[in-house]
Length: 637
Image (cartoon, rainbow, N blue to C red; front, side, top):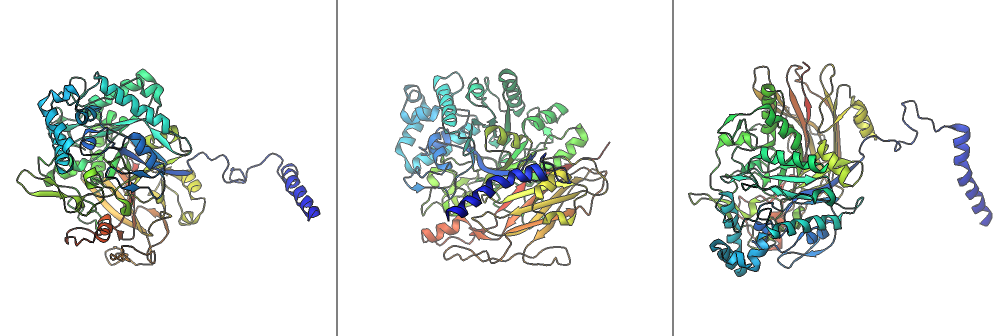
């Protein structure tokens, strides 16, 4: 045995040298120009990282007021894989840690909720302050109602100035400093990356125009400033003023920052405007388009408060458009929704409006990639359907949460219940490594996609000469980058019709895939906005019907458990697809939607765990999905 070991040791130490010297003395590349090792000298991102870009802790007034006691450090511990105790005393742990995390507590009234709950003298001296202090001290339903009232007062501009802490208040700066300190403390590049961030919470008449502001930088730069608020005179609810603030930040500190809007479905048509709602409906100008395109490269397409990809009224031919739809009105339910508002609220129609404005202004203001997030107000990102701790502390797991009335319209009609909220979502970023710089850069170049929770891997490339055999390659990413551009990019000039390479691999712990679709939007020669949904890959050898439609995949869900099996669907799907309706004179965008087979919704788990008989209108299953950032085509001038 000792002799054999010696011989094998000699061979293992000697052969690489012989091969290097005699066979390939200079480490020559293969005929394609690539090194022999397929992993060497890669000039593109090879890893996808999953995280939450939108998290509130007990520092946000509408969270802390409603009973949330988990703070940033608690949120980080849960997100990186530790078990914590929830706000209602329940143990909670994620199935797998997240890769990155962004705590985005509200910039307005930062630090106030701590003083309201603690009964600071300046708070108790104010009539509103004392009333809210007493309600929060009472706890339970009284505290929950007070938290919603606090949000409504802020939404309508009726909050007492004594409660709306602004920069200059000592408590404000102390809280911001601690938010930065917590992010620095938990940042662990390569393992778990944290970002300094906040939410700019613009509400004009209850219309949701919120943006999450994400810094690339650490404390050295982000610590030089205080967040921008929406309250004059120090702040403003106008996004143009936020963008000016962001530009000043970069100029003064040398840092980098971007903003991510969310919940257009609660903006009552203001998220993707065709006119300037802050200037009495004046026409938008190129300066607006340039600024928005620069500072807002992403949009949050899905979260707890509804999915924002599409709406069935806008896309009646799309059988998957009605998914976790939230369309009762504005954020505080003070103004009901009308159909005319919808085009200014959803991803697909927003991307279409961008094409129209580009034709008018020369710049596309709505050229955004897609991300997903939770918008949790519990300090916990729990997007698994069987581990849903909901949006608010009052809706943490319990037998009464599904039936609870959450929003009521001015006429007294119940508009929203506990069951209406989803368990979405996460952001996926293709990046070179798990670090602030690499992930932020991936977001900035829009190489991202949104998921409603599952961690499926999705690639999407556009070009002009992809071949059917390309999808069979195991070095698919190398092929994609060498022949085309990735999600979030502009198509390079080419001849003929563009082709697209798309691939999806299911979550290793999740459900099989039903299908991959490519959604196209375009501006036709007559100036009309159009859309089409193409099934490009699907499971189970289904055949298109006479209208080109693929039949539903079926369901294996057993609601009595609840559970499902992966006996239908496919673990991976891919395709090369060429646009059959391409017109070279028409600007267009293309994005991918990946859809899983049906699985139990969180309400089904509640029904079993708490022995509930839920009303028929409560959905018990869903088809989770992912949305990639688009690829744009612009006609050559």
